[in-house]
Length: 114
Length: 113
Image (cartoon, rainbow over the protein chains, first blue to last red):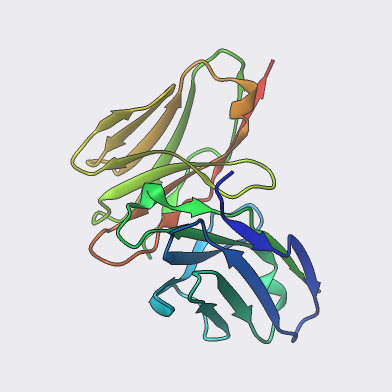
């Protein structure tokens, strides 16, 4: 196992609702990235957090937001859910000074928007 | 826009055979490449990486080949085993332009006995 955990495992929401997904990083990892993986597609980068601040963002609208806490756990929040937000949401943690191969992914949260 | 893609969406091989998974990328500024394996219900797992100053790198039963001239990447798995059945993704980045890894669509590898 990678030491990165995510909760919940599965979630069903209705269009227009808001959702919060959680990630617990591997011990000692101070950087977390979030990815969206639609069915049959590769993961797409949403954003990255380091020292509780967003320091990189992909092509996602502002209704996707995040938080990183002092213990390096993090949240992904999505407002005004749309049907196309249905996907597997992955978080990945690493040391800020680490290389990408030292980045570890969690098992993901499967979000279904109806 | 720039993209990373895979030639074959599915690949079926017999146990013990060698597997080759291909990937094309279009961003000539990409300088770092990773292959990931994703099993059902799990997140991507690192397999092997290669930087643009290399054209070949070997790991345990795996070899990655990089052809920068034609922007092509391949993953070779020797003596494929049933446990190798998974979806394989190539991912690339330009180390000078941020943190995001750009993933391809993936190839599903099925190993039959």
